[in-house]
Image 1 (tube, rainbow, N blue to C red):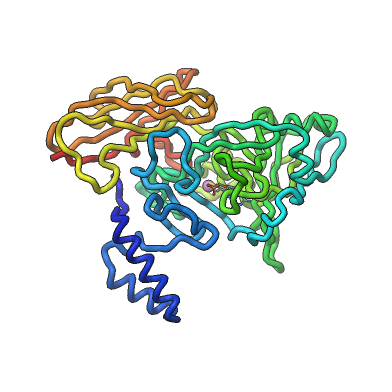
Image 2: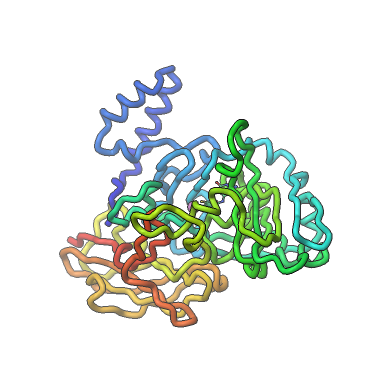
Amino acid sequence: METTPHNPARRRLLAGSAGALAAAGLGAPGLALAAEAAKPAATAAKPLPPYAAWKDADSVIVHSANTIETRRGAFGDGVITPSRQLYVRNNLPPPDPSILDDRDAWKVQIQGVKQPRTLTVGELKTLGVETLATVLQCSGNGRGFFPHKPSGTPWEVGAAGCVMWTGVPVRTLVEFLGGVEGAPAYMTGTGGEILPEGMDPKSLMVERSVPREAMQDALLAWEMNGEPLSLAHGGPLRLIVPGYTGVNNVKYLKQLAFTAEQSPAKIQQTGYRLTPMGAKPSPDQPSVWAMDPKSWITGPGAQDQPVKAGRAVVRGVAFGGMHAVKRVDVSIDGGKTWKQAALIGPDLGKYAWRQFALPVELTAGQHVLVSRVEDSEGNVQVEARADNAPGYVNSSWRDHALTVDVS
Ligand SMILES: Nc1nc2c(c(=O)[nH]1)N[C@H]1C(S)=C(S)[C@@H](COP(=O)(O)O)O[C@H]1N2
Ligand SMILES: [Mo]
């Protein structure tokens, strides 16, 4: 099912030669020619953008400067996705790196509480601290498997990771400010990108509303995986809404408000809606919010390396979205027969993913490896994707199969 050519060494070479051409003053035509000459690997040859230059080039697929995906075979067997391998998705170009010069001076405005005010990150750090692992997953992860080829990045499995966040719980902050004012239905976070002048801000701003109860487990985070939050991932401050898709986890957070209505921003009103096939996006369609149970195989055979007949351990990741993982079943015959896999590694809570493993005997020939998770409430990962025009929230175990040729 992997459609992206994998050849890290070749990609490195191409990225290097593209850089050399740029340094030599050759513009886009030169680069285009280089890409042309380098086929068939040209699609994988995009270099990392400067703000994400610290990512591990061999672990990711660079779709564009603002869309970078983790390779299926790069997810290791440690539960936390290393920052250098984690996907990146920006709807707008990221802000200037100078916003990280004085992290503690970054300001966030809190509204819809009894005592609305602006606090700095330095002040937030005096209120409380908690560390939480969550699955961060783009709403469009798995879009590449929709046969109707929706517009947008054709992510396969890698617009997701399991990440450790440190920050102040939103409920602690709200308590400090006297509680919410009235009975607002939503919690609304606003991204701190500077918008180009002369355009309607609503058409561009990253401002997302989630049901207010999501605040119970939400964090305002300044650290990711034990390090100060990078620009790529939303530093100096990010809203983390556990169990909700990526877009609801607003980066460069400059305002958090408790609101009666959902944000008027386009990204809320018509963006990220489960728009039926052939229909126009509209606010009365369901918003992409809480995640569903999902799992996928990460190996063996996800990279180019050959798989030899004999003993093998089929591995993968599984999460429940809003609930803990109860069990994972694995099939090496495309879903005809199943066996329960072992959950391995530490359990970092219901919002984290679990690694799973099943020792198998692989015979020569083609095998279709699939996995299926069940959460603690008895919700089982769906077999078939729920079609929608923009290609969101594909959780289909069939779509996420890994086909391997065993010799
Ligand atoms: N301010 C801001 N927050 C944002 C975005 C953005 O463009 N701007 N993109 C969202 C989307 S669509 C996703 S999937 C996640 C990606 O998070 P990551 O880049 O840390 O992986 O951030 C979300 N938060
Ligand atoms: Mo996303």
